[in-house]
Length: 161
Image (cartoon, rainbow, N blue to C red):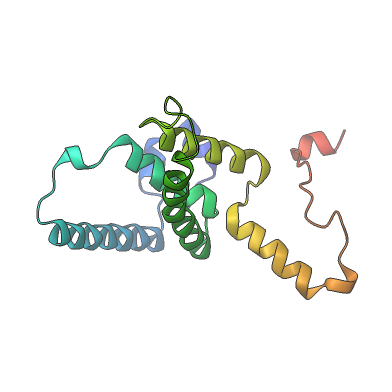
């Protein structure tokens, strides 16, 4: 039995038993995959400590998901490729930058800047850009300029006014 959001908001204990068996299986499968990934990583590095997982690594993981496109496996792969290539480009650019700019915090600044720019200008990520490009090639002679323009979505009560 699934409850409406308003019912769960009014009486939160009612939401505890409202999950479907499918959701429970998906959560357990993701937890198992996460455990396997952690075990493989521990086997590879031979030793794990909390100091290995820095803030920059967390930012990289969030950047992979957001740059690639939230909700798509292809986007995660594209985001991972982008995040792997980006530090290499930063290290190449450090030779041409002044010494005070090319400090240790340059990578974090560039990651943050790229993340903000993607959120503002390309909210669908690299996968969304790929979908636009693929659609453009599929519809080449009939492609309209404003086909992928974001439309404002209003609540139903505001549309009825």
